[in-house]
Length: 125
Image 1 (cartoon, rainbow, N blue to C red):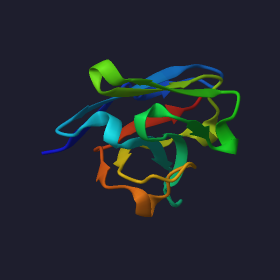
Image 2: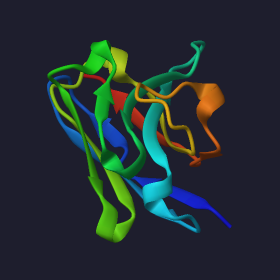
Image 3: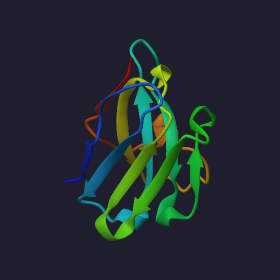
Image 4: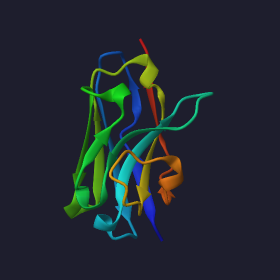
């Protein structure tokens, strides 16, 4: 049974930082592309970051360039999202995702095989 467990969400002031973690189990980690998506109230779910299979490549959405960093720990089957200089527009539920896709690009929702339960990030003064 595949499980993706996110942690690290919370409330922070604009300009602050958070680090999200996703612990994966029940899958062969290197056989999956891993990604982070987010969904703000009333908006569509959007992809933020992707690490392709075997961590060959990393992609970030343009909206988070220079502020977010995706990293992968294959030894611990974990993926992290370091979020710096957070803005109110970053407020959303953040989801970890796993995909068997071979595409060398940001994941799309239709690529995703498994989702985490989500963790709330709120950026507000």
